[in-house]
Image (cartoon, rainbow, N blue to C red):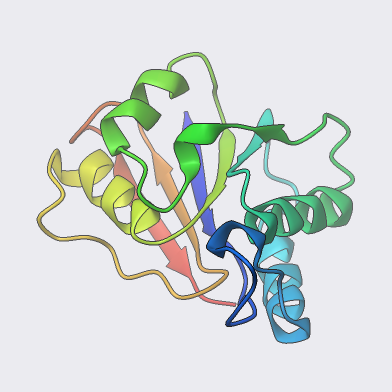
Length: 149
């Protein structure tokens, strides 16, 4: 099983709420470069935070890949999400792309690799992490790569 974790692209600095911040032009370009890294990968699902910048990121990836299923929007991928809750929700998905935010993405990668969150993985905007393992369990997945756009 593989899990790809993509941080959203660069977003505008201000909006009415944090959840409403849009990707910048630069952020869209970053996402397109990261999406190219997923070409040919056996994705079964794209799951994204409900925040606008994550939704825009997920849709750009979906379009670049020609991925037919709709993006699944879930409330547990927001910036302050809990990695344990994310793992509970992943048990039925193989080869999934998660589109989310810091600090969740860094904490989740650390949790999947080490079984704790004491050393969060640094993730720049539109960075793409690839992890693999038999099951999405804390401490049992290996970090294959982290690619910056």
